[in-house]
Length: 311
Image (cartoon, rainbow, N blue to C red):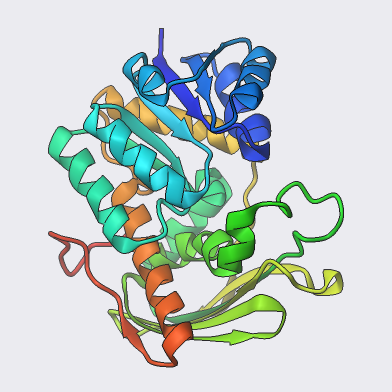
């Protein structure tokens, strides 16, 4: 039997992606579901053929790993609690809403030798990972131009009613997707400058350690006609678009389960582990601070990071 998982969360992402993938995975055992609304937890558990838990600590005690599909501030607290209980972590992005919270999760997982994976959807598709590996090996990149404009507040969108997305916007919801494919090629970010724009957009300039510069624009409230997801590297090789993922979200999450299981069995650490998740949070937090003050903000390094530390 594979890893015993507890699913924390009952929303659309928990139902349609994480829960569906865990229930179908041949080497994962979905032990139970916990949610902040017990009725929703019971309904989702019945749908997935498992047991609802009213006490999150009881579920954590009964499993080997937790998969969390909750708002990032809630996730950060529960991930730390699970790590302190010795449980492996399969987290959603962003790991947390503060660098300090992400640092605490990293410290706990490393102190206890726990496996961790953070689910940046496209980073679990071969087309994307093969491209990033090739681009990083080529070198010679001067920067990136990225635009991710979504319109989640249109009628019928399952994410439009999310309070944390309304409060934190595209920077924290879709910004992690952009950074997850930029950092492996351009390396760590040292400084960030950001401004707010129309339709709750955030426009971010990143200066990377090796001198490259990123230009990132994100929003969740774009005009429907302006929806786009485009990430383009440029440099000595000209312009090169980063490809889209080649797997559905459920298939990609199944791969995330595989990669967590490989670590638990003694395999190497994952490029999308909590340390990389923390790196993304630090950039987002710096961008948020810059947009609020109008000043350039330095990105704090993780403890123990060196000149080659990157996702």
